[in-house]
Length: 320
Image (cartoon, rainbow, N blue to C red; front, side, top):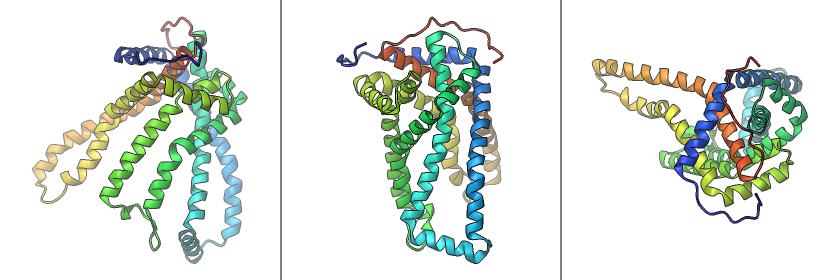
């Protein structure tokens, strides 16, 4: 497909449902491969993180030793007086952590690329992508963190800072919190949609800059297809984790005085049901839905760019 082709809005909800159903079937057929790949690479990234954190912790220990209440209090006061510097350090550390996690995500996208384009994949494919594209995935993750997460983090951080209390989220008033929540959702939704094709482009051989450029182009020209799929993912998140979030908001009101003990007992089955549903949802996301989302993005990318899509068949779960 020529990237300069003018696109017309033609995506229907059936197209989005088909994207999700097809990807879910493929994820189900290779669930064990994805689980082993995620587990193995998380271990690798955790080891890398420790190798970096240990010398940093050693330097910090030597710099602030001996640890005491006075030294920690002085450090807290300095951080409060220089909140722009301390906040920037926290943001940089956060970007680094997100970048490491995105290495895992990028490797799973690599597995999904092999599955979509070749018809099959194995756990070792993720390790191959991890080895060959580690720095590329880290650079991509850093850029995604800056574009998608930095603005909401800065907004919440500035709103929670007080010259006397430092960083304290309790000082954010309910109206301000509501505005920040809406801003965070809208920002992450639209920037997430604009950058949704970045990892599929990277695992297809694009450089970081070219991948972002192509993702922005595809998202603007195929707005209905990409943001339709993103909306389906958001609805899936709401269906799986919405009950526990809603219960979290309602819990303070449910147990507030003058709550009658029999009434409190009546809510126990509801709380238990929500807890069981949440645990099941977590396992579903780890085993099925996360691979489904990555497979779906790769399939859509290949379709929109005229790439290869192999004939797919659902097979028994391979061992590796």
